[in-house]
Length: 480
Ligand code: ADP
Ligand code: GLC
Image 1: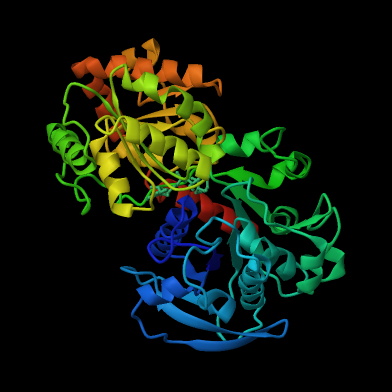
Image 2 (image 1 turned 180 degrees about the vertical axis):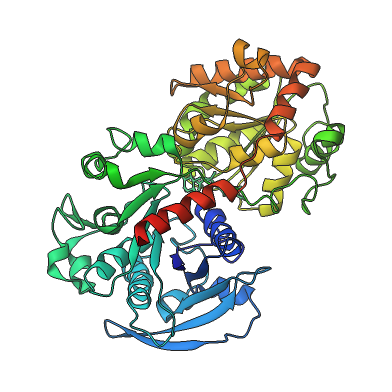
């Protein structure tokens, strides 16, 4: 089975969020299971800087009049063959793949990701000198949606799978942009890419893929109805028989407290007391008071509405009074960044705020915090709660999407029967969030009870194996 897996980011080459974690781990697990996988990514400038491999293959391709080169490398620390679409629109611009330093999307994103999509479609349909053609084209999120639409118009189209990591990002561009892209006019239709007078790249995947997957069973259900479907519930509901929820796995090598290279002190379920050293190291490095008698609550993520900032910000000072300490790591919307910074300036020994993208600190928060906050308004899967479970840092989540699928609330029954792994609340309001935090902090004070919850959390298996098999089954059923 030959598979072309394409995405706009993959860890460790280029990462802004969970998509990179998935695209940087699932293809390699599939390869280890016997699938002949090629990973296709844009050759961003920063990515080219980070790899020292000399490109082994250079293939020139003409994509609607634009010459691109396909460079070949390996995903670092793996034998996974990775192809990079090299064109000045992608490789000529350092920085974030999607936007400038102010968070404003690059004005030519439509052209940039259309190049990636055209390359994926051409390779998939055998129109390249690469001497390799897949049985399955697997695309991810809006950046690669048009690849499926374009491949479908070719008689040599392989089977196609499209994964939704986040329906909120639809890749919307206006009619003038659509014209500039020189796409077949038939794609400007409600049954194709058109979405309320715009062109949606995401719809390319949703309309044309043989199978649509999304990253948790819960989210697969939510998006077939309003408001979770964000206007696409009609289309998704109509394709329900082709829509599957497959839970994301985690890279159990990168996210393992027993071997994590970023953290102060290694630990596992048998040496859980050692986790405390990570807490004091974290407090010290962030200028927090080194208290062992208060829980430390952590957040890592994009500072976006999706992540529940509106639930948290109004009650953070009340959380400090419980008492508890807080650490936030993230970048995103200016209002949220400023709101957090003001609180950190007012309570420097109790709240630490780091407005940056920092891989090492993300690991140190997972290891050093007691409770991990993830009160998302919606969450297709979420990876941080899975990392938290593995690190014995109990997740506090809202009951949506992948969060509801992966965290078992510590209610009386689940505590009694030993299945509880965290704290789950329902209503999207600051009061409900605060009540859940109060409840979690009360549990934390019961040291033996807390230890039992941590051990159950750490025993959960969210490694890729099971989910990778489900993808392989899907590819097989599609190919057959
Ligand atoms: P999403 O993809 O919606 O952003 P996920 O929970 O699936 O959310 O994945 C987010 C990933 O990005 C995690 O690996 C998380 O650790 C990482 N991450 C997000 N923000 C930061 C940051 N500021 N610094 C370091 N890592 C971050
Ligand atoms: C998205 C989602 C997140 C998911 C990630 C990887 O960015 O917001 O919930 O875990 O993709 O699939």
